[in-house]
Length: 359
Image 1 (cartoon, helix red, strand yellow):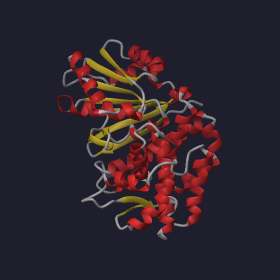
Image 2 (image 1 turned 30 degrees about the horizontal axis):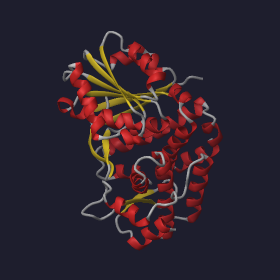
Image 3 (image 1 turned 90 degrees about the vertical axis):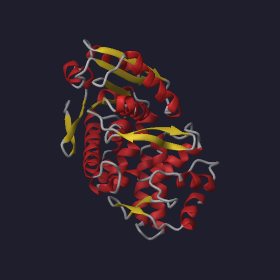
């Protein structure tokens, strides 16, 4: 069955579609309809380009198309690469009705979206995510950014895409490790907001790992519906949207401390979620049995659930203090009260946090 799922992100009068299904990259008329102006710049990376760039260029026939192929990897999400995308827009002669197309995973989507936010104070951009993690998380919601050596996603803007087209056929070429990393973000939605979905993931873990098309499409659609609802209620992360960062304060600290060359983002988030759940249990906020279920599901998906060796608790804590959710130097952590019930915590004793990092 080749079912197409449609989800809408509604931000007052502003709305945009998320379409999930196989073969969307080959629907030229639909893709061209999302590019009303003459100029379009496709930004992708060296891993994705050999598989899908030509198909997107063919779909955009009749437009003045430029391309920018960047090296792959989180370590490339820098101000320097951001500058290269702006230079490519300038070389194209892109006007204010230009569209930037992000073809790739979360790194490409974040970086290209930030360039779209800044070029002539904001142009249209379309997300064509090719990784599971990008489909369920980074392509939806308008968070765009680049990293600094001091921390992840510290320079960026909120800039919503015009559309998200998630062609699940692109997951056929996704390495197993990348697929597993994306499943961490899928698990997150069950952990923070939907205990029934968490149970569904437990029941369908093998199908998801086997890349069953219907199971993957269902998991992506449920995840996107959750994110779309949260973003609609809190676009700029003043309250509820912070819950989407469950595990991320720990995870971002791990990624930064490893120089963006160790764990993948989803792997670091998996570790971070378990640390957040353990801290919640230590504080008496949540049952230990839910922490065990979370760790068990992540391990079934082949994800790490403990800090990599060699990381200092002091160094990680210092990285966490620079987290974007911190206010006036005070950490705000996303903890939970058990499956499906995440919450913002501002009163966590540092000794308890250190104990989890040092355990």
